[in-house]
Length: 418
Image 1 (tube, helix red, strand yellow):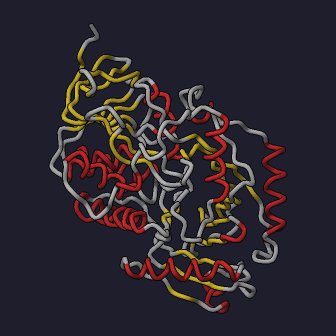
Image 2 (cartoon, one colour):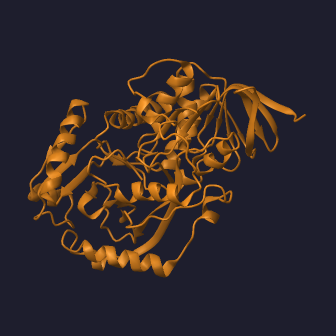
Image 3 (tube, rainbow, N blue to C red):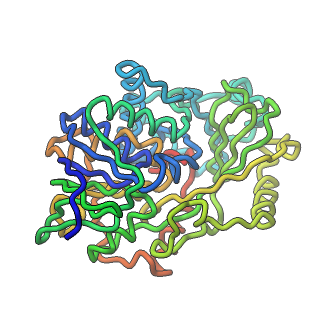
């Protein structure tokens, strides 16, 4: 019999930003007997590689509320716990080139205002004043969302966790979760490399590694690891700290400031997917690196941006950062009970929105565990909504890759950060 090494009311599997946020929000709900289990270092995988945009724009009212909860949580962390998550409230400047997109963006802006999120319309002169390197003259619509910004995902995650620890939560690092302890059709804890941790409730928030872990229960988690990546330019002053995020949905592109340079990311025509059952234990080892192909892709995409960023050819690109995001076929997160297994919940499939929606995902998960309602309705995110899937199959992975490729930043899509 495997040795019991610890016990808690709730065990959380995964020490990224979602696990840390869930721990914090459980403690705020009064459930402080929480243990967070992480096999490596905290917040060092997908969380540390995210571009960290915090955008409210979405067609889904629940997603807007999740981002609002993240903003509120960051304020709580500062005011109540003395934490500085490092949020930069620079706002987001959005340029819509195609006239056929305008109606959708205006409708989404109306939804945002209804949710208490400010959205303004600007003329080209005002847009240039906010971002001098941008040429907005041909835009059919220019919007500015002053409540948006960006944040370092790892820094925010550790702020959540330090606050959770002050409220009673514990962590156990260096213990890889290998499976689940069960009695009948209910979990009773997690089986780790160090022994069993008993728990009445288990929340899986292990990112790309959640698929293989849940497969051991006979359930196919409906999400696939998909590469997300971006470039960072040399610190030449282009990315002054006060400059806004820039969203170019017609080009599938986003930009934000970064220590005097710029982060530039875009949607690939065909996103790379990874077999969730053969992933190594670190994201760095999992990711392929083909410098020649990545350079060719950057050059091709930069050429398409010449009309809106005339000086882009003079920018010097110093870094390329890649990570794995979990995508579902419909581009919506997975949040709720795992089908057929009592006491087991899943928070994942964030589709590039994990940083921005982390507070809302944490709050909604804590509400489910505590049996209490929140203003976020988890029903549309039910993990069972796709029925039976094979997450390792090429056909399913292709569906998830298509969701990644069609995501349009700034078009008020359900995804809100990278």
